Image (cartoon, rainbow, N blue to C red; front, side, top):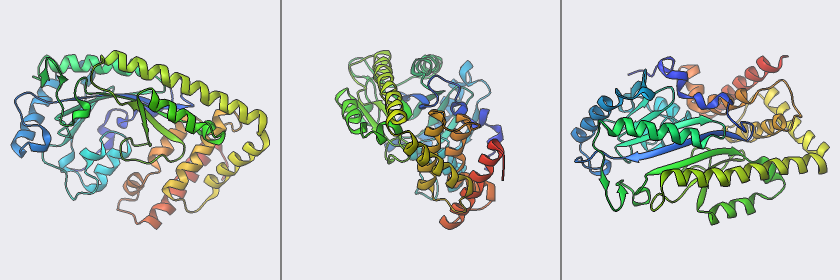
Length: 359
């Protein structure tokens, strides 16, 4: 199978549009629900036949959901390693489903990509429903995720215990099986050295944080994924409301930090951010982590109105399309690290020149 990205609704990335609330600080909001099919061994113990049976059942149930009308099924187990990595770079599949370090993915692994929702099939659990929304919109993501679950549950028997709730492969997901998360950009709090207090406060409030790609990823470029830790003992809407309230406070703290920077260190910050922009515009080689850090600076410059003529949408695209699997796709072959650094610099220069004008 060859991955044809043009077949995916919005390329599977409607969340990058920067059309949602607080889009300069919040890239996306996501709600994910972990579910398993009753009567079938959970994924860690499932046979190839079990996984293929689950895939067929999910496909049949998905056909009844309006949220998945026109959805495209991608068999992850038929993709090359670079194609699997590309889906991971787009946040369409998890590291576990992509099996980034394996030659081939497990049999029956797939993702069903719709305009408003996606289903990962045969990951750690049989089914991971996920809904992304642009900007800060946890309530919108939850509304669609719950609607999708009702559509599927009407045609698919799910593993459920009356005392413990939905049953999952990992005990930490038992109960609601819900993981709500918000991907935020917090350079103001980092530069004012307030980020430590904020992150400690998150943990005290029962939340956790990770890097740009969630579990297992490091924080780079001041991008933090904030999510709930608890899945048992509270209703789904309560968990989403709690996350939304805390993140709203974090957004307020970040906005205040940016005002402090502008007031107390205006020319220093302006020089730092313009240097980041200049490097991106003219560098001939960019490492992946270096590019993220520089894009963070430019994103802050746009958010503080220090740099015009550049949209948050373009910056969101650069975060994804400047990554190695996407660059390899454009070049038509796998790239070495040196080749990827050269290609990344060419791509970023071209994208910034096209929007801002000039050579």
